[in-house]
Length: 349
Image (tube, rainbow, N blue to C red; front, side, top):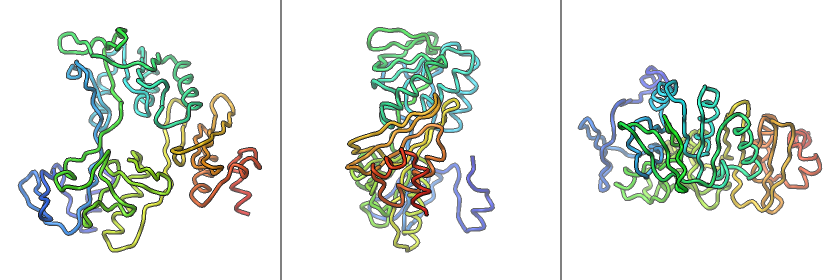
């Protein structure tokens, strides 16, 4: 899915090498070796190498009809296999697993989702929203198994036929989809001796511990005003905003990355939107609505640091504007009965 046409690159004097990999980076020199044998010298280097799907490590992962979903090629392969499957097992109840399940359950198939944690979306949303989405999936026919771990995939004639759980449960499976997170691509950074942890460590200007080497997107680990402990943000918003900062700094501007994080997930007719990060929250307030609406406000020392909402787009937009511009207190929100859109109107007068 091209972001730009070929003409864009030629017009802006960008040499584009498709189907070509950087094989190695020489730590002692600013030199890159490409898979076509070409050597390229660089003054500045930007690593936007992303992440790859985390793979299962249990027996049976090499069987046929076991899929991961990271690229458009993966999506085409999966789509072609679905019509021949009666029983589909999804391993992982994060964004990928639940989004896939919400699409598959609308087919004439039995869909089972397995999650090692005790609730769905455990890494990304409050328990109240976990319960909300778990109910939504179960009500629509998904079989949901939490606090369960996969022991092995069982096959027949080289193709998966069952998933065995650690408690001995055997689940029929004509097709298995794995969505258990991602792993940053660190190999090139390690060749250069860059500081790496769960990602390539960068500062607020996307710069690594080598002054002329930058990293941005899913591969980069950074600290900021909204994530003081440091993390890797796997989102479109982060990849775009962080790369703009890196490019500006390379071009000579003095720019820092301080964007407010935001995310979304579409499942059935439910749109989950999150602004901010709940890390370090000391209190949260639930604001329920209709059967298809809900919000959770996260507070740290009476300051709102994150708003999670479902099917409340106006609230999400208001939260993005207010949290990015300044301090929103619990008292501010109580004064308007937690109607953050009304608070935005009040503060804009």
